[in-house]
Length: 297
Length: 318
Image (cartoon, rainbow over all chains, first blue to last red; front, side):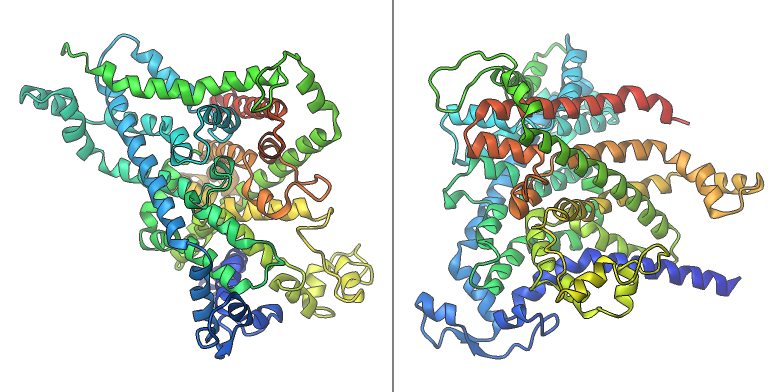
């Protein structure tokens, strides 16, 4: 019996390990390419990190850097040159600006509305709630074209506003917060009112602190979705590099398989992809919770 | 209760934004799809159903529907089944489940665009490790397994693997060939989606009471498969419904991999709807036809969701 169980366990692990290898394959390729020299990449040699021989990189010399600067180990060269070629910090900054703005506005709009729907009685409440439920069905990417037309008519294409505005309303956020607020006992709110608190302070000083876990999950969901979003920025940002978000930056680095050097290109892609992955690995339980709890996109 | 008018200020911003950002665009897309409007035109003309007629008669758009349907029909069931299998395997492990969970969830988190490029290189005929792996396996075990030589009806001299080996390692250029491009795109879609489904299923599995398995065993369901049929699968009904709907909606919206890897080609085999909207309306400035595609697209999604909410939902509760 014991032996049989161990064999069963072994089988399961071998299946899962094959799966894990397939899943990790592109990650391996990405990291490996960002560390190796062009020759090693083209001859598929050198394993994960390559031989790391000090050498002079011709593309670098051609770009106008001194021979001394261009003579180094491949991994240093790849990452250094990636930052020389493209304003990577700028793209990351844009990513932070856009995702944070979106999240903050979403919360500012959704919290009071969710509170009103959960805890205030007023004429038309059911109607507003059914409107929220209906809007939940509309995928924002699906209506990207009419939104684009509206922004174009307003002259907002190629601005931060274009990146942020369409996402300012998160019906899912309203729905989620409302469900959460329903579980908050009325006594808590009544007590706050007795203390003379206005409805505004109740939302921000009483409800907000109780909602931190739900809010955190929503924050992760929102930030991950918009950090990774490529479709919408691709629609509304046409040429202005100053507004590029990380995915648009990635697209720019790629420049096609025929581009002169793969090492620095992959180094840029790794740099842009890594922050979120590291955050995920550090706080994976919260991430998995956030993304699945709010599994709507 | 209280007599404040606070609620008006609380709900007004949300209502206004919902109307402007979510509801009005539906009507705008609907309206434009019946005209010949192009962005930048001063005037427009009502042309009735012409855009829709084009959509259902021209070859390009027929191919678009075909590509989208293929992608959805392949990716949804496979990624759901894989997600379920992975969840059940992990659930029955004694150790190590957390590591696999993290690994399988990585593709969900990672920027899909970056991963698409990574896959492009992984699958590249001269630079990629996949074709290199295949080429090194000619005449060996890999050829036997992957060339399906173990199937009785496959002639080992005629298998795709053997033929490629014979023709100077002529393995497919996965993303650029007509016969393989859509399947490769599907593969990347499955690779990206199944970890998400796995996590939802893991949550579903923890909700099944242990007593049910004991009861099933007493009723004579001894084998794992019988217990799965009798307990696990029915108990996971609501999870499955949710997983299928979410995956379908997400799958319909595939864009990143197509735009960066195939641009809808070769010969429109990967020309999915989101990419068509982008290409027609933004790159070629054919706004009205883009609007018509948008309407059909939204129609698909709404039908699907209503189907989920009102038809099936009544039947999955045990």
